[in-house]
Length: 552
Image 1 (tube, helix red, strand yellow):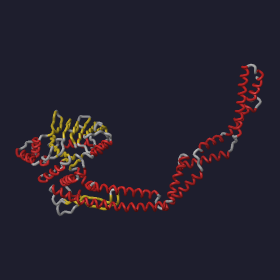
Image 2 (image 1 turned 135 degrees about the horizontal axis):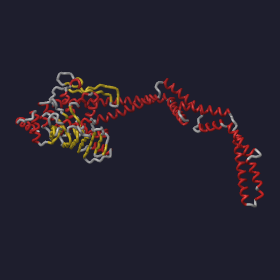
Image 3 (image 1 turned 90 degrees about the horizontal axis):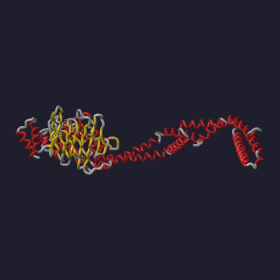
């Protein structure tokens, strides 16, 4: 629950800390004093959309800190999953600057807005006349009923969801077989052609590089042959060739073997002679293999063109072409067995859909059982709120199977005895919706499990006996959940456990709102002000307020 809220430069509040207690917290004060601003600040720290219009005039940054205690195990687990330490207290800090920068910390650790909302949605709920519009949205009615029904329905919904997902998966497999028999036949023909075209090419992943090198060599063979002939003439084939000259030189020096330095030179010449002979033999072998073959060149060229053509159709490389061939082969085998596979899948789908239909009907029966209870409880709650003769019904319409079952649900309502029930949004007034919302909150108290509920003038437009009944409902909720309530109704305010007075004043040309926790006597006085609706409080109003408090 909320322990304290600290506002810095938030709208009319400059620097303010407000303490809250367990039970029923009443926010009192004249209209426009800033009570709703406190609720806006609370919404902001819980993750509401940031709005720079709340930034106090002349300031660069606003900040709100919320301190929460008596943390639920669910919230502790969320923080544990985020590696954020939490004993029994959560401190949420949120700032917004003039340039739009938004910073959020939970127990000192930065978190995203999405993370914050996932945490605080388990901690607090807001109720006001505008929130009751949610009751008018038919899309919410099924989820509200399911929330009321609780675990039994949630377990059955999971069964239905899994079966629906299984049916969807089988339908996808059936669709992947290619539609009609004629469509599958056309696809088989195309795949067979593609597989055969690639197979007949007899591709090798390493051949492209080899072919290119061979192509380049053959293309240059005529020039290579000519140059090799010229070099061989100079090395070994002429009388004045390098090898002949080296042979003559070593022979002429052979007679001076007793001269060491000369003999060493002769040996070097002799080695050069043998080296050049070896070079000549290698060049001769290359020359003999460089015969220009235009047929081979044409064959290589056509082979490279074939591979290039296949690459354009089936992949940029030989590896990709072969991979495509394998996939085509697998798909072809699947299609060739499609009749057997299709029969098996259709039998499986029929089995799942039969089971799905059974479980959907089972879920629908459960919902109708709880809907009957829900109708009675809402009607009883509305009777308590002086809405006599009202009728609340839940209308069921069967729809196509989905992950949520086969039910469309709509809340129906009649505010006056003798009138037909119609869609809730077509008949309920603002005051009736407020009381409906309060009735829902009383019934759903143990279902929603939030620790703080904010009521923003939910008693607006209600007075007399009805106001007293509203007060009783709020007191009932406050026994289980912390309530923060803005009210202008004396009987509602008198039921509070903690009273916070919000006032507004002008100081040095600046309007500043403040909030202060009241003593019991101060609270009586403020309730008397609500009764008199004036600055001067009469003795009669004080006496009446004291009696209201005495009935607590």
